[in-house]
Image 1 (cartoon, rainbow, N blue to C red):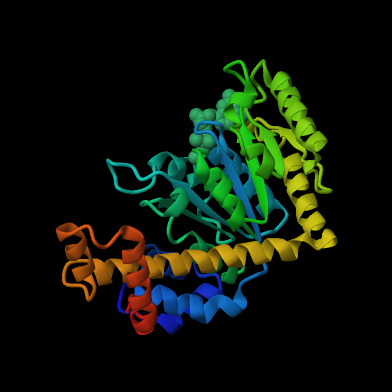
Image 2: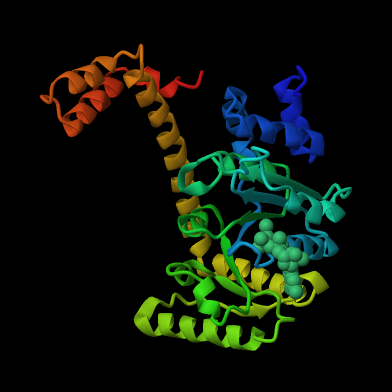
Length: 333
Ligand SMILES: Nc1nc2c(ncn2[C@@H]2O[C@H](COP(=O)(O)OP(=O)(O)O)[C@@H](O)[C@H]2O)c(=O)[nH]1
Ligand SMILES: [Mg+2]
């Protein structure tokens, strides 16, 4: 699909916001193409300006609908928007779920907005392997706001915190207890809470439940100077969206005023670095101990005798890699 086009040209066009160039560079990142590494090296001096927003919560809470409306609201105030919707890999299509694309269709046709669905393909923590690369591309393409939608299953919703500046947790009323849908740990990481589907009869109760839980959290001394707002929305009717946008902007301002933005940036940078190192080292290890690898003998010995325990073996492999550092760094190339 990708034409034999000069990477430099593609990057240049992407930096000017060209949608086709953005899409192609994202595809390279998703495929872990060596050109993606080159791209990040080229564009990194242009990243760091976007406000990165995470939206997480239980499936069906209305995250995609909300993301779409929020994007429209940002366009109304002339801010450009990049959206990454991360979905579990569907065994049927091998890609992201189609529904999100359809719901967000109405947004396309506007150059100030870019939407991409990504599968998780077993990346660490369930987040797509290329999430950070894609965030960087959107950031460099001068999107003022980048929204990352992730499904709230277990660890992912907590992991997403490291990737974003402002984390929104979406829940919905009903099923008796809103708290049930806001799993342990997520109350600690959310910066803005949304009760979507406020057209539902139990919406007020859900707001009260979340408020009560947040209160308990504060009482336990976890407060940090930002009082997490709770916003009730009806995404399908575009209700509460302007208020949500306002709360997001306030959080962005709070991060700047309190200096917390620097802590956030450091966390983001660290997790980005760790992701890359983990990926690269894992590849190198796999290569070294795999069939035909330089240290496949360790596995063979371990199978034949029990003289080498796994920890000692790990030390041996790590020592091997450190002595041949080039293999780790260029394992991609
Ligand atoms: N009644 C009602 N339905 C909504 C609302 N927001 C979204 N929905 C519906 O809920 C379903 C799931 O929405 P979706 O955005 O895909 O949720 P996601 O899985 O969290 O991304 C869709 O059928 C939406 O039309 C809302 O505020 N009220
Ligand atoms: Mg969705």
